[in-house]
Length: 381
Image (tube, rainbow, N blue to C red; front, side, top):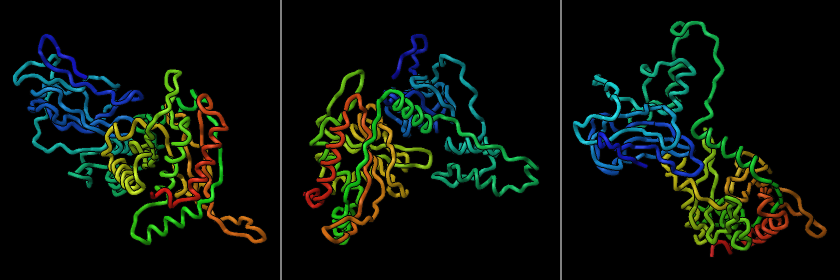
């Protein structure tokens, strides 16, 4: 969002509000400095907002007259970040003095800045090992650990505090709003996944890199096609049942949880779905996902099986009305006539917003999911 200043004809570069839930953003790194000439749509500054990082682009061509928010600062959405005008034009506000040092500016991640402040580390003495020499949290901790005790004096270690901002703050706000605003009910069901796991192993032997999670996600899209009341959102007292499945797949990061979205997942083949999930997961882990790639989901799946969890109570990602939790596969004995057979069972936990979905439709969804999983070869048609 931009607005022209009448007197100086300068253009304000504001922090965009990339989503309705975005309240603030943190300036990670300025790509340009005062006096630099920029072209339209040229990256100006890297912003960490909610759970992603993205660049704010120059809305007009011109010269950077003023930078109003320093690296590491967190400001509300729509805050003016900088002013762009014609070369030589006086800015609307006094321009802070530009550094005169010829020393290259070192990039520092926001987490590294916080950690350095907590540990009392002088960032000027830290050598960055990240891309382009960027200083990371690892660099700060390593520097603090390697510093001789006599250099820092006998000090009692202070407790580490983490501001509830950025990704952690966004998660806290959304989850609090979710619990406070919804009537959430969780239904659990053990589903026999023996055939599904065996089918995944057969595909693996053939050289197909499809995971058990990929097969589960495909089965979820099939079940949602038969139960559209769960592929829905609730906003402003209006329930919208969506014709396409915008499937959110939760990915755990060191500092939080992020949900990239597979667009129109129900129309994708198993192989296409598998590829898209891997690519999106890599993007969020490398913090290269765009805001549009982590917003707009209509149903979310979160899997804690890799952490040894059987069942849990997933919290709905608003404005969705349901979320599915997936636990680990456990081998259990099941009566088979007069004999006992060992079967691979997974506990599925479906949390629904009882304002929009009743328990019976939720139970029927889990039943359809179980039937779909029982015939995994059909998922690869």
